Length: 186
Image 1 (cartoon, rainbow, N blue to C red):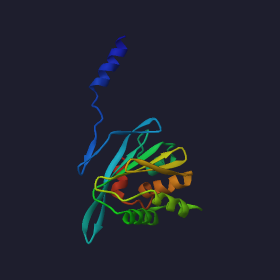
Image 2 (cartoon, rainbow, N blue to C red):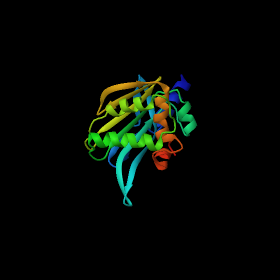
Image 3 (cartoon, one colour):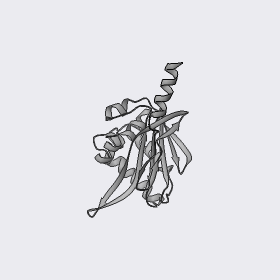
Image 4 (cartoon, one colour):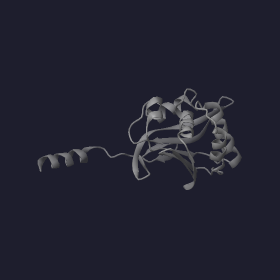
């Protein structure tokens, strides 16, 4: 009985996981995916510089069952994994599509036969976003599930698309080195 009480006291003394707030966006400390609770691995701000002026685009959050601190660890993780993107400004549907295509063109380091078809399907699932709008991508098994504004839009089968998607954030030409480090919890 004493070890049980000691364990309870130890757990009560630990600080509770709290939401992280970035640019007014409260990022939850965990997310449930396929019935599994995933803790926050890392979160960061995506900016884009236009004429030497940084523009804040979205707050990204990455959830994983165990801490993943390297590209190799992420690519070999069995999952499930989840990403949320909370936009800090309104974005029209054409700009959403253009941004995803640009990110894949610039940052994807995992090319495969059928990528263009999968990318077209992926991009078609996202609509316009208001300020505070959320896109979510979940990697479960070999499926990539897409949610737009909290609504499930569909999935793309295959580990190849998952690897291509992960390379955007963690590959050699990651969207942003600062964001890559933040999502890895550095």
